[in-house]
Amino acid sequence: MVLVLSGICLVCSALLGTVYAVTKAPIEASELAKVNAAIAAVTPYFDNVPSEEVRTVDGAQIYTSRLGAETVGYAIKVSTGGFGGTLQLMVGFTPDGTIYNTSVISHSETPGLGAKIVDENCAPRAQVKGKNPATANLSVTKDGGEIDAITASTITSRAFLKGVNAAYEVFKNNCPTAAEEPVIPEENE
Image 1 (cartoon, rainbow, N blue to C red):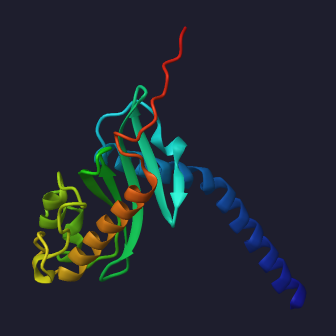
Image 2 (image 1 turned 90 degrees about the horizontal axis):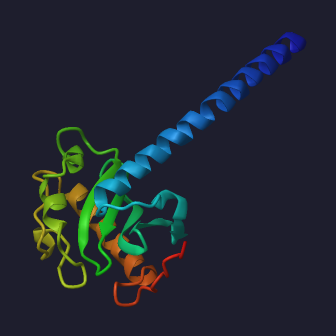
């Protein structure tokens, strides 16, 4: 019996290892495509590949979008705790710190309530666009802020805004503003 059980375990382990090896590359490619789509959605038009220039700071990923030699924006990927679990966001900033757009990469929020956060036109996502967190109070109105919560889903709205504010802190401490940005010389051909 021990030999039979050991043989079954060996065969199952080999099968699991094979499935992992076969599916690893497509899963990674799918995740990279999801990140690239989120970057494109939250920053102005760019011609570089921001996912190739990723920096990780305090658990957040920073992607720099460039058009030629000029930096047009930064996409910052952060995670925060929502009502149903982790909420992963991509927040796009222009070089002066203004929020260009946001994208919800993944969530575990309640369908029909907190899951409305994926809709680009829901109150919190629509109302943060064009605001600069340095001068705007990005918290829900129930907490004295400027942003309306999703009806019956204040916890998700608070989590979203917490993530946006966390992304801004990463931006503020790690991304040069347009005035500070170094000039990249054009290559002569």
